[in-house]
Structure formats: C-alpha cells, structure tokens
Length: 54
Length: 149
Image (cartoon, rainbow over all chains, first blue to last red; front, side):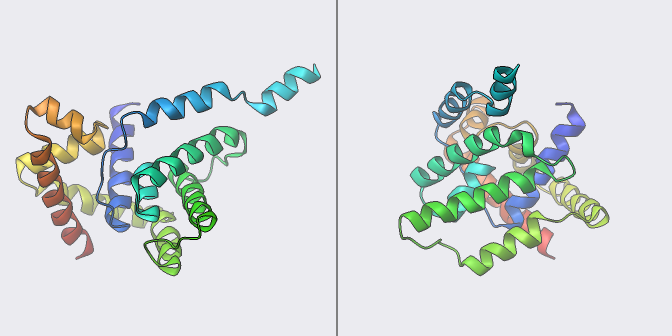
C-alpha cells in the first residue's frame, strides 16, 4: 500500500473509532495466525467449481 | 478495526476474537460477491455487526449497547458516503491530529498510519505499554472533543 493509501485507511479507521466511541485495544497475538490458517485451508469454492467443470 | 468493533458489540475479548475469525472467513468466502462501488470498510463492518448480533442471539445475550443505537451507528457513521462530507471530516481530523502534543501524535501516527499494535509501539519507542495506553487514551479523548465540536 502506498503512503496515500495508508493515510486514507488510517484516517478512515480513526474516524470510525471516534464515531463509534471505540477505545482501541490490541487483538490477541495469535488471532492473525488463526485467521490466516482458516482462510488458507478453505479453497475458493467458485474457483474450484469452475476448475472441476472444465 | 474489525476486532475492536466486535469487542464494542460483544463486550468480551473471547467473543470478539470468535466474531473476527468468522468475519474474515465470511469475507474470504464471499469475496467474489463484493461490489466494488461499496466501501470495503462498510462491507466488513456490516458483516461484523451481523456476526456479532448472531453470536449474541445464539448465546441468548443482549448487546452491551442498545440495538437501535447500534443500527444508528452503523447506518449513520459507517455509511458516510457523501464525498464532500467525508473530505471535510478528514480535514477536521487531520487538523485535530496536528494539534496534539508530539508524543500523543506519534502514538496515533504509528497506530493508525503505520498499523502497529500498542505492544509494537511500546517496543519501537522503548516505553512501557502502560505509557502507550495512557497517551492513546488522552489523544483519543482530545480528538473526540475536537471531532464532536
């Protein structure tokens, strides 16, 4: 992501946190790994189906 | 962002973690149905809101915040699609950030623009985690006041 994209994303996140009154906390350390392992082991069904058809 | 939103809606770290995993799994499964015109944050947070409500209903619990208030927050703040209004809000926010004391501005920069966690900020600045948290709290409170003026 370029620096403009980073700033825009950061501003949007900050705006939402302020509007929704969120006090940010760190997510558990292992959460990212859990998410990555869940998405990695699930194939894209549409793609798999398309590949199976051909 | 998703984790913090889920935490706001469920009120516990364990459930927020559960919802966040579910949200990313759904996003991954439905990524082909994402409409490019729609803001990705809107899409993600709507999925998060629905997943949080589903989880709370399954557990026969109510959200820590009122459901009407929740709908209002989601509809009125997440769906701020008016480009002019959005630009003006961002301008206000940039102005508010620039008025923060240096040490608080640095925390905001590292957290929101560099994507560091509070633990990573503490390590990077070689200050205690508690100091990061208190500076962040002060900064957020000042930004909120400026923002709501």
